[in-house]
Length: 436
Figure 1 (cartoon, rainbow, N blue to C red):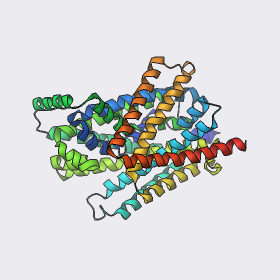
Figure 2 (figure 1 turned 180 degrees about the horizontal axis):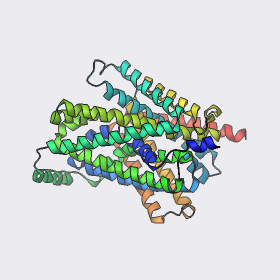
Figure 3 (figure 1 turned 120 degrees about the horizontal axis):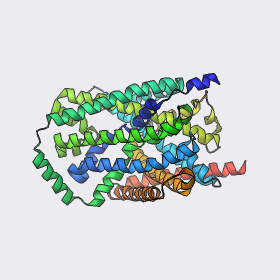
């Protein structure tokens, strides 16, 4: 017992690091080009609006997290709220876990792309995939090694990457020679030419960049004082990340030509920094990207593996995944690492990322509905509940419309993934009910 108590070393600082680490992954490096191509200089404001939507979604997670105090988080909250539905529990368990696995694979691939950029193997797909798999395995070993060790490493990576990203944004602003009067006119022009629907669509598409705040709840068995630290860590990490994204996006549109941001896609920030600050600026962005994706891999693997083990405890995933060493779900961590590696080998990670985006919005909506159902027990505001449900519903519809208009083949592929996951979840729920 004493040994287990000593393992509970995650305080507020570590929990905020987990929340930030889960959010600031590849997102900020990929959303700039898409946002600017859709609404121009209004992109920073739409990205910040996405943070506000995430803040409302977090409200439901915080209330449910404080009420249930269950490391299963998303899955456990839904299952315990709808106690009589094995099928619903199985569906949300499978969807959520595969969403995390897909983002884990994307973070690793983004790490590899930035880590190898500028080198001899920058465009060697085989080497990229090999490095991506290697970094996943390294963080799997770190997570298996020690909760405290993971927390300390996450602290270092998160706070260094925050410092680097802040320095990048300040340097971009410092080097800009933009006429602010002219910039205001451009913003006014973009506002006239962009509909409210377009701005809301960008907020929905970039919402994936805020995925990860809920990983804080997965650490409930390893944290000190959850009643105070769950809301503090989640809200603080969201505020920090929203502010950081806004500053970086604003600095980018101020100093980097719009056509460069659009053309260079996920490398927009790095190429723009090179144009403005030279090789030093590019190197700084690369270091920031490597640290951002590293901490996102670590934080995502930490939280989602505990959720996977919790789902397996209830019989909706193979029993072998329930094995723990103390509070560390060893087999679930290994399973997450191997499945993400398989996705990297298979390729098509951008499609899988969009699946993760849709899943995150949809699952957040289900959490808002669950919290609204038991709002008297969780002491939640009825108005907040309604606003959250409406906001997430609109966001889910808008991102589907965006996919339909821009890449219908990708939407079909996502639908096929959902169908396969639904079949698997259905079989497991039927098996569970038959044999219990």
